[in-house]
Image (cartoon, rainbow, N blue to C red; front, side, top):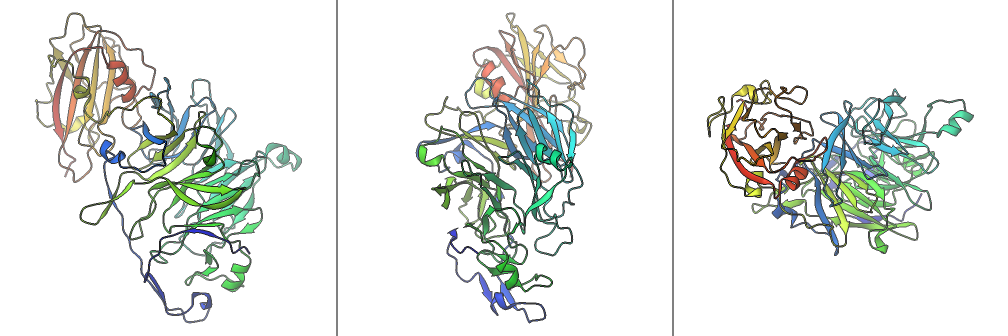
Length: 584
């Protein structure tokens, strides 16, 4: 067993007091362990421009928003043509995003796959591979970025339990690897495929074995290795494993393991450097014997930081001394005080060997004036773009960020105000609704708690030179994104003076020949008000713009693309503001 382990852990005293040496706690013996642990969940904060400006990155690195208006974005992969794909676990879909003008900001985002519990994601050649809890699927990626029908290639994976989020990746020889997390925090499980990394041999080896989609256990004793990747050059496989919860604020570390075929990595009986779990013990072996037959981690990171996606860097944009390293997201703790994680981390390698951890992007976790902690991002997804930038996903404030080196292609301007305030056009349009009084309450049927249909609108005083009408509905009181987009509709006829009730993405009256874009749920069309329970009433701004042109925007255009297209073309604007509060 190896004993050289690089450690990145704060020094804390008095957090774990043991009445007996843990290594001596075995079956039939007295176990008396005192543990100091916390359930501590920092408060969610809005990702404002001011907070983003406080983030810490190495000199020369820059972070900007790549896309907003997602819904629990998890694992990220980038196709060779630069299209970004991200799984969204909560709604159960996959979103495809494109930066069409090279400014580092996505212009389109649209759902290309609907799959309940979609999580793991990998792209190989012109195919996309996806996982839910029990299966792995494959589908063709077409030239426009859309995806063909899903075909099942692996089935009957273990049940989900505590760790249902499968991740996948392809090794240098074309083998498919599947991470299967444990069903519990620390327990025995009769299913040998639980808490493992599985391998599905590449097609040529399956043919030799007459095995269509057979699989084997590659490595075991892995509680939940969501992030893993192969080191360029050596082809060695490294993975970040989640440590056991509730052993104490400062136990167990998150582990970086060198994953080797046929090896065992300690869980659930052994952790860190031969530390014995005082609660769960193996059958037919002592815990010490289990430790002797398990591999040591090559690196230890702050306990409970929750490592997520991990990638070795293969590009050339970053400085030379950053190019042979790996990068990983740490979503952040819920059971440690002070909290840990909430950051993007560099895994430094020298001569192919792991040297240590250091922050790449930190500051998403902030201590407040009263001493409590809040966060404005929980990083999960991480991928590399063809030009060598990194895409980092936040699954809670529903944003993708782009981390780059050198001068940014364009200076990102703030877009967290309402569109009508950003564009500063004359406010000479009169906007009304027979269903909503100015400043009044929006009837429930127009909310997502009700029927979710769009309300009727009308407008007047349109300039004679108007070529098209745009309607944009935004909520400035949401936490993420700022503002939340509920509806975008462009290229309505200049002669049109209103919209009837219940326009959606599937049905539009013939006289309303318009294109609807992506809202902040990455769905096309209208999404009704849905403020969280307990919030005060949110304000909803129905904004109407008269333009001197028709807009040339693609299917799935988002707010950023719309704002860029609107600049310099708005002749007049107006708005109707209504409010809505979640039913009590």
